[in-house]
Length: 356
Image (cartoon, rainbow, N blue to C red):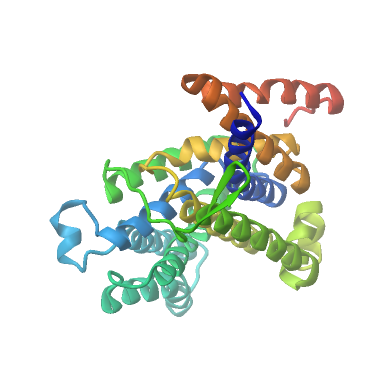
């Protein structure tokens, strides 16, 4: 291997690492605030990539969808999950003795965003929109799924142990993967590049898509820094991450913090899907492996350190790139094997308690 090949592999690895960094940050964020090891993070990646592809090329799943405006399956999925949330909330509210007016008000709040998204998709006809508008609409479709998933799956067991929350996460992962097969089909999708230009820097050819990935990743990290440092909601999330009971005593809703956190995780997952869509073919179940690499990176930061998670993501990306060159058939094995010495090192360094 000469220097030119090494530089090309490094660039490819850092590019993928920038996407894994977003997933690692989302994983650390969700765990810090809700104590949930969110295995289903990768599903939002697949949903984002496939939703944009369906806006570009139409929905291949059956005539039912095509007769109804050729809408992406994600639009129907969002509406269906919101309706389920309304039914569940109505049953719980009735059990607590809430009146019909309050139940209708809660239902209207739950359905407002999904119905708005559905109306925009139905009447404005997403096909034919420019790529940037379709990308924004994709984020608007996938992001509301995060709070709904928290309400249905995690809110009832929010105070359970980490192990119970992990078991719930496994169930959420399989549920979202199965729903992906129903609403998207088994066909793979690949999105067009956001920028087709190429730039020659020495022996390396830097694509415009790689530059877009770097800019989007850095911009999102900067936005998260501003959000957590300068906004009241961001500080409330930080307080919840430090001490959930103390946050409750100070009037911070841990349930609201959980919904907002899953919303941020869904947004970051969908954005990652938009960025990775032009570089690989995405299937309904592709998100698991992609999200798992973000999880490995988050482990580098002990599910607590954001900078360490970002550095871990870049390391995972570079390791995967060089692993693909030397032994492409074992690249996944190489990446996931790295987590073993990291776990052993952290185990010896910090010990463990019963809950862990």
